[in-house]
Image (cartoon, rainbow over all chains, first blue to last red; front, side):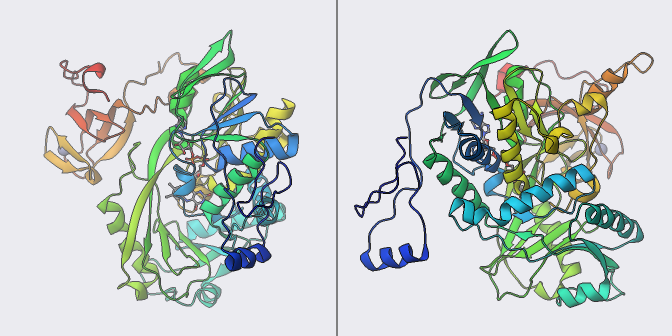
Length: 432
Length: 97
Ligand SMILES: Cc1cc2nc3c(=O)[nH]c(=O)nc-3n(C[C@H](O)[C@H](O)[C@H](O)COP(=O)(O)OP(=O)(O)OC[C@H]3O[C@@H](n4cnc5c(N)ncnc54)[C@H](O)[C@@H]3O)c2cc1C
Ligand SMILES: [Zn+2]
């Protein structure tokens, strides 16, 4: 394995493994001013790989990592047209939770929460997972009913999830307006204590660092232009840096997924919508939990730096444009002030958009397609960051064994033709 | 902000409209098989490029419109009343990028 990390300080590390980060190392390098070793390696593009992953977001990177670490498959290239984490994985609001609506969904996302809980240790990279609690507010009887339903499904799967009343909501989040005389009074909330937020860039970089040190190659600025097939099987990939022969291609391009599947004429039930988010200037920490309001189309959390991070539902028409809009900011401000009136003089620092590949049932699409050797891990909509670890793990298992693991069997592409939808709209349209 | 030039009302902000989906999808009500129905319901071209689509001017004339828009730039090339023939002068090759 050529990716041995050597410190410029002179001490060679274990062959094939990343330099270990530790508190001791921080002190040592602080004192000696020695440079940190490179986290990633760059490579020439080779002409053949066992597996080609398209898209270096959390899904592509996690898949590459688990292929290497769980199955010893390292002749793998991750191809990225732009930069690592330049898609949704570097633009999301990093909410992690497993309180979904269907048993299939709850089981699946719970596995991801479990993987996230030990990810810092597994990757030797601090991903700052903060399980601070997640509250989905109910402003009317209908949403209270859905929340009770969700809580029961969650409990059956062993997930910590329950419906609490407005007084309890006010106790957990003191600055929330829980009075009864507001336009959208808070009647209660679905409370999910293990939910929280994470440092999304650290997750991407941690997977990338671990994967490249196991021998996987990540090629940035390498756009996939076409996929070659013969007799219904994948034979190669055309890229902006040359052609590759391979028998296995995984589509991990989220918002761009239709453009990749089009290359092999696999029709997808996907529509690409922009999703916007915004942050305020940093203020002293006052908000401990993640707050979501479906009726008000808004959610908020506070980062460790003190910025409030806001998000909403997707833009109302399909687009691949990542420009922010004034309509979004206006709606956001109006809605968030209904919930937390005291932040009315906070200033927004910036807003941005990312692309979301929406499916009809708000569940992802993972697994095989009619083209042999062309797999998909897409349909991540507004909720896919939390699923990076589990999807990577399960897709890697599918690639290594050739059999679809039970945990993702319900999320196959064929479900749309067969009429087996996994309806998660009630749990995923605003709360990502 | 996306401006849509409604043939009945003039240029209006897209917030006045409801996006009504990709144009050109159809199924035969009398004879469509379940598989054809599902394809009609769930499959989309979702192109990065020029797309023909429909809009409903819900906060205006409340009529359906057809348009051609580039999904990468959001440039709207033309808008016509629903059911009217598309302006023939434009082809995909002409201005696609
Ligand atoms: C504003 C916002 C907030 C969100 N909030 C949350 C949240 O709180 N919780 C949550 O779980 N999810 C959230 N999401 C959703 C989440 O970000 C995505 O579902 C997830 O990041 C998808 O990861 P991915 O690896 O599949 O795709 P991406 O990270 O989008 O990566 C796809 C990559 O493919 C590359 N690519 C595209 N075409 C090509 C090509 N032809 N050749 C090579 N490379 C190509 C792109 O450049 C891109 O880097 C949010 C999304 C947005 C936009
Ligand atoms: Zn009109």
